[in-house]
Image (cartoon, rainbow, N blue to C red; front, side, top):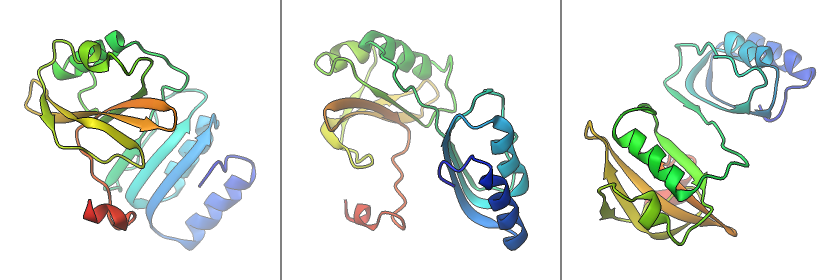
Length: 187
């Protein structure tokens, strides 16, 4: 369902529900839908496999997620947000010390300064250089910086170039489903 939060979506959701007992995968995209419409999808479609929600809601209320799914991905965007490398450093340290973001699987942010990212954003954070990690279709710069959280969970911090922007990604898993992207199987 891609940006389909106009009035026609009610009919579509009802049609899908009446014609499909279960849906193996559902991705929902959109900007600022009324939360009731998003919740209507979650309440009326039985997703059994993968549910991925890529929306910004107006009310920002918690969603009731059904317990019939095997995989859940919800992305929150920091669009038009500029963090300094020092602020990124504080975020990383908070994750490492388990003060917040304990269930975080990945964190992606545009860099305002690529030049001093390692010196400032990774200051005071022990890391080991790791092998390059592929992430979407972006160009990896350098290798990966492997950091370990207080409980032993390891994450890779990588810097990528996407067109003219630089992106820092902290990710605990770089799983790429090869059934959807078979060319990643040989990387």
